[in-house]
Length: 139
Image 1 (cartoon, rainbow, N blue to C red):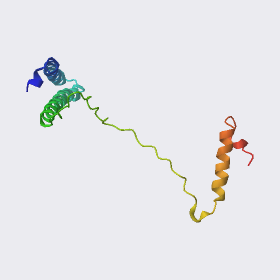
Image 2 (image 1 turned 180 degrees about the vertical axis):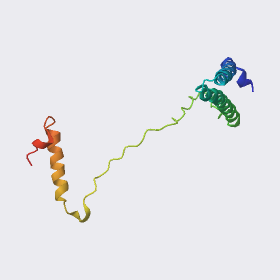
Image 3 (image 1 turned 45 degrees about the horizontal axis):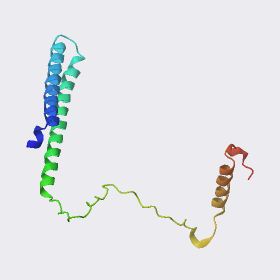
Image 4 (image 1 turned 60 degrees about the vertical axis):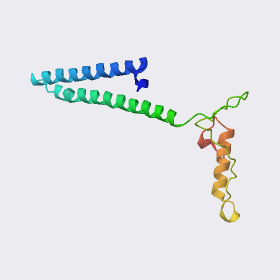
């Protein structure tokens, strides 16, 4: 629980209380305006308490996350370092994908597809002539 009384967490607690009280106050203000005949204020009277609930939800989730992280740190003991050895470098959490060269699959039965070959010739012509329009293709 000491982790929740750091200056950063005290600021979070204060911000949560200020926001919730402010949002609920704005909700009550909208209720009084709605009672005076402003029909649009009925929607806002519902909206402000929802905002307050969202602030409490985010605060609670962050609180649980911080407590869970401190519990996990206590549960996993650090490996003892050997004297004179360099500290071990931790593996990155996200690794880069491995590039694998793929051989294009040939057509079934080993026969060339005439339409595919014509389309590939068309694409290579378009690549060789970047300013040309598709209608300029001579083939």
